[in-house]
Length: 287
Image (cartoon, rainbow, N blue to C red; front, side, top):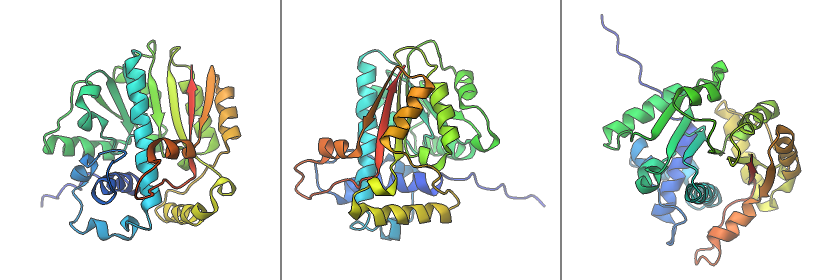
């Protein structure tokens, strides 16, 4: 008897939720939209009632939804800035359902984009991109790395054509909280060895006592949900902590970008008062 092959695992629930929140921003929130991204929704093709899920409830999740589009827009602006100064290598660690290559083909055509992620979800994404007619452009490189087996993302990158002798932009969003402090320090140390003029943008979660009081219950709910899904939050950092780690890794310059700064940049004077929840900040470091 012939057995039916097991389906390729889809992205984890965190990547799925982020993609759906980005789409919900377009469908529910008033214009102007901070980011227009429904490609992830098309890739996922969820059930028609997906907006009725508890984790998609429009009012209860509006702060998280705004935070997701805020950080995605910040990174997209950074990619444009780096491209304008001649950086043409863009590395996404834990790429999930990143859709820059599909949404911004004119920008993607100027870059070698290296999406680093676990092999199974990445295989699923490749199949979905092909099935929906997006395909895999020549300068989009899907880099499978089995982090659970302790495979080296650096080895995976160089095997796929990445040139460590040229500057690059390396981005890691929504990942550091799932890693130990040692693992994050190792990533910083490896990235600090990139060619001069390279930039790292890494998001991190603040300890609860640094969050706005109104956002603390939501963060606690997120932590509980992550633990229940088998992906517990492992690390929280004060800005001083993360800057120290980056300095010890050997970066030439380090800079803290508060999430509140992005909220002001992208959400000021909105008629609907939409604003990101507090709790996720950025480290910007350059070699």
